[in-house]
Length: 338
Image 1: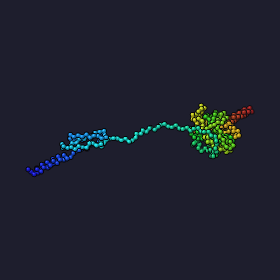
Image 2: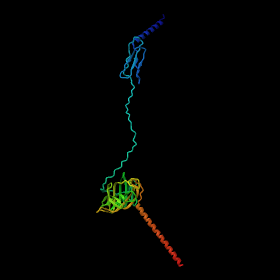
Image 3: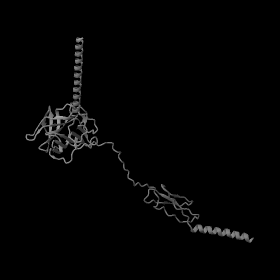
Image 4: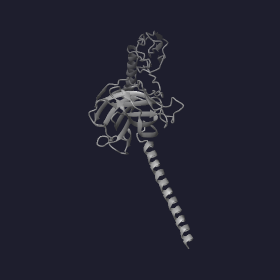
């Protein structure tokens, strides 16, 4: 036999022996496949030996089968461990429901009425018109005069909040100057009156109501009164809660702070503490005290101008009538001489 053929047969025989020995001494095992969200892991072989791996601490079972090429193989694969991967989601976030923003607007707080206190302290600085039409509503006579440098009647009104105002009052008098608030241009119907009197060169504050030209003392919501007297010049400043001007059927405006204002003066007897009837130096149309740019007309000066104009017109008419009568008389006499 050819030696090459013999060597080939020997090689084949040795290879078969080697494979048989390898099958007897080695066990082929398969590790169970693990995947997320998998409830069982199966390894199938051709062996008839099946081992069910008990599950531990899991809700799934794993079945493992082991096959060997040799019939006498006794090795068994290790049962599935407790390392079964369980797909679990962990939510650590806190679901917080945020309420929608509220559309409710808080109602504005209305300042309370002032507590009455008529004590007077010294007014160190003179009143001025500097803040007129900026932070305060002003009226004066003569128009545009400045109480800090001239002789005039002056009133300034500055809103503090709600019905509360700060008033600046100036004028000339041997007795008193007063601010009168009326709900219409006809004064003298229970009108609120704030009085600063010259009490032996010191300001004395008095609250009153004006009815038919007569002042009746009362208590009004006034405090923080300051004042000074220099000769006949009286100046005072005070905070006051004005009445609701819409609380009566005689009002002339729907605003709660609309009044006709009057700056008046009158006599005051420091000995008897008597007040004379007021004489208006300024009386305005009905205006909203909170409107610093409101148009104001001094009805007192307007009436005076109208009276003067009417008198002058009447005088001219009479003069013209006399001239006409004189001409007619002269004409008649001339005709009679001819």
